[in-house]
Image (tube, rainbow, N blue to C red):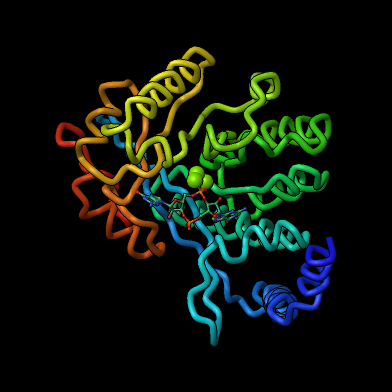
Length: 291
Ligand code: C2E
Ligand code: MG
Ligand code: MG
Ligand code: MG
């Protein structure tokens, strides 16, 4: 008992924890400045249809380029921003940047469907739908080109408010998608109430699709569930031709992953639309040129 007690006291005063707290505090204060200082940047990862078509789909993924820390990956600051509430500012930044980019591409003759990620906390922000609608107007971006990705657990904290807010976002004319399907606390009773049109199967089920029979069963049943609910299905984390072939055979609609492209900056994406074999299906007319 004493030893245990001693342990827990030692833990409280563990200097390593002190360091962690200091590190967290400094990260928070720097994250606060990241938006003002314009240190955030959007990368875009294309998705391709498993059937021939000429529709362009991309997912916008935020990057933090810190002046001294360098490239900070999302997993190092998004969960942290979610815990501290600062995600609200990040989401507004991401939304505005993605909508502006989508409007710019369209003005240049390039029609791109842009998905962006929003967090559970954002669904509790009652101003978000009106702010989003303003952004669409300001950047002359048609709502139908934007998809908001949310995780299946996002409604669990306050389901009534979250579902009402989802409906209000949907009413602006954008599409909604369930991200990382299968990894959260799936609640089928909420799932059927969510006004979504797409489901994204998490890459943890997709990556080992060919070696792990259980993963194949999960992917196959998810595709069937989604289709029966009238939803399109995207598979994340497609890293090989063989996995893409299997997904196509299973009837999956869209694929996203390093095989097709990593997330890349906007100018690289424009070149990708022009040059990549994935950007044009063989029997389709050439994709619209970027002016
Ligand atoms: P996500 O929304 O599920 O995004 C997909 C993640 O998987 C991206 O990581 C992408 O780079 C990675 N990925 C894509 N294809 C492959 C593949 O073939 N293999 C492997 N191993 N990975 C692949 P990223 O950009 O590091 O983002 C991680 C997560 O951070 C995102 O997962 C999303 O939950 C969050 N996130 C990123 N940007 C934003 C944002 O703007 N807002 C919010 N709220 N969350 C964001
Ligand atoms: Mg996503
Ligand atoms: Mg995802
Ligand atoms: Mg994921």
